[in-house]
Length: 355
Image (cartoon, rainbow, N blue to C red; front, top):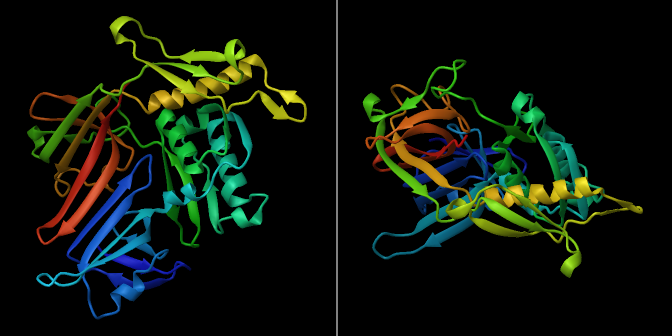
């Protein structure tokens, strides 16, 4: 992997193509991260790997922000440098939802409103992040999504991450040729057996394109019914529920949504239906954090049959099978690329698509 170091003005400074090890991780519904490990050199490398500088990777459309520099000294192995940081999506973590915000209607318009009011064009100019723009998706799935939610003071990254997880879509912030930070929602393409529009992408021992795999299935944290408590005290408190299950299959969770208010200012209040919809949205977000985990992790062969970035991409649904008979449609939610003295490898993480 070849990296380009960019300064705070996003101007290229140098190419970084030699290091002892590099781990670079991209994610579908979260920020990615990286770690570089290298011997301390006399070529000025340390002076260019500053905090708040950026790294561009020829193998990824994500940009990383340098956040931490660590130098370790050892009489036997010498001095080493460890550089780490997170991708541009972490910029959202620097802002909160300022004041009370009610979202209703189009999901995409709601996310755009959150970004406009807290990053792109906030009323307080000090909160603005320059050259940050929103790129609207034309994907029919995303365009059709709806939202009813209310937030007050929540971290902006946490809000958008929770919304996307509940909706099953991804988000990313990339850098365009005009040096703008471009936020967009995306959904990925279906390349499993359960469709006829796209060529199949299949990972299976039968095709010798799985080097190793790890299958995980866990209900340890599963919750499928939540009681949501809204505003009010004692017998006056307002409640609603999300989820349906009974008997041993029922796993309950309480969601405290006391911060959601029916008072929206200027003497106006939400109707019972509107307020209940906002409570239920909060409940859906909490249930999305406590799902039945079914995932595949594995090192795949990416040079012969199916190449990441050409045949399949982040967020895509592919067909996966292991040698123990587990087969399902899975979504690519993470791609870990690593390079060291032993060579390069790619480790995707797949999450089973639950209908």
